[in-house]
Length: 323
Image 1 (cartoon, one colour):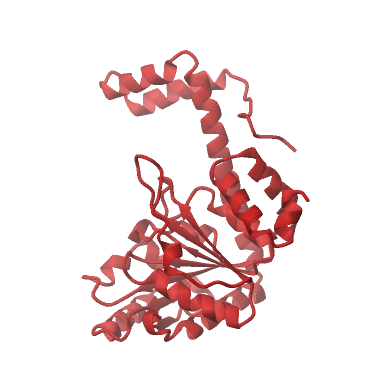
Image 2 (tube, rainbow, N blue to C red):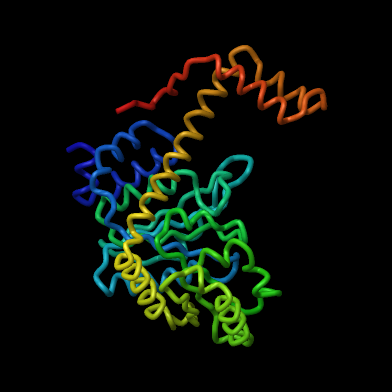
């Protein structure tokens, strides 16, 4: 049995190997995704974002129980920060999500230096899980605060999690991350200060509701450690997906996802090709040294390198196949 058929028949080991191949840029992974791609477009993706320490993983564990109780086949991707030196990651979120079920697949991904709270292959892995019949996919971002916004390109529904005692609570969520939330969850709501966080969020959201068309962003108080509020949160996520479907917004999200995947793919392939060309005669190292010593400024260096590459015929890196 080939790998694609094995995955469709529920072979979790084959699925895990394929995800690893996609993470490592191996052509085998892309071939399997290519074979299964026609099956994508059915999953609802829920992103979980928020500052470190707010209890995202604990909350997801409670959401898992709700989704499984409601009969969904569920996948969870937890993105962890990587070492800037080795590219490795502790991948600890999976340890905090111990549930075992034939309808549940949990995978940790290393960000590998990719900014925005995700890994550079997250989109492709989401597509693979979608093709495999996971109708709900939860993606937990790294949790880097205001830069943790790339999930907006991948998830139809984004839940932003906060909690009391974050210092300047709303300041911790301002800018980008405040703008991506379709639902806000105030975790640890049994602690003092939860009411103030909820009130501050509602006040701030009232100023921005005009950007949400017909969807009024809710604020849900939860206490994940005690399993309180998770069902209400999942119910809001389902209602938001239904709203998107009724308003015809699912198609526009798929277009945005396609644009993002193509952009990331082009960046990767063109960079590998460009670096391969520039390293053939040590041009890359020479120009880098000139910029480092101040002999050449970065904009001029980039223009020079782009001019050199413009004279070359593009050849796809090994492992990339057209068609």
